[in-house]
Image (tube, rainbow, N blue to C red):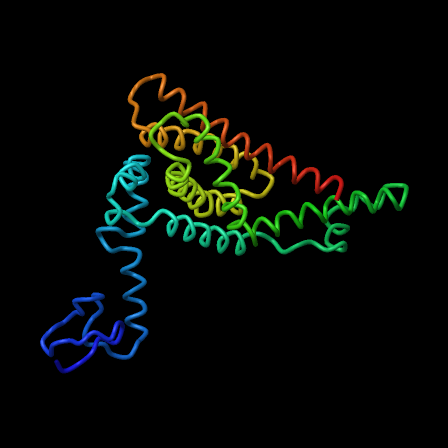
Length: 265
């Protein structure tokens, strides 16, 4: 017995490479930039349960991933909550880079000179306030989109759980499935739709978002069809209907609250 594990203080033989108690390397050296970069690459590309491998599986196996994870294959896949939080972080980072800063009164008056033609000061203030609040909503959604996603996911999950409440999955297990599903959708939106909107111009943003909405409904439907694993035409149509309802419910709720804030303050 010549040394101790620096992690758990277990006694180690001189010839061991890893601690038998915690698995940490027996011989460590000072942290270097090379080691940090190596760990980062390992995090994203390690073959058995990497982030990138999970993305591939969420395309080719989609809902089967969550079903297998819940059935006991926990070591095989990147953890669902970790995946969801990581994609939310990426979403915030890209949204912050691509979204313009919050507008000021001067910005609004410069961008919308027609406001000056409104006859009353109260009218000009009202319209200016609408534009300011619209800008504030965009800034808020960019800065706190991770929080918005964390609020949205349990609500979307609740819709699925209601319609599949007689199945074998509990609400928490449905939530695991939604972590994978919603996280994947958020990542696609952040990495493809947000940059595309910047390239084609914000006046075409609604078109890009509508296309994404349709694709998201298709993906969520196929995902839940495989997650529930009831192979029949009625099961597929049910998955499509519930997916449309879940997304439409969230869009209606958020758009109503946003419109209320923008119009009424």
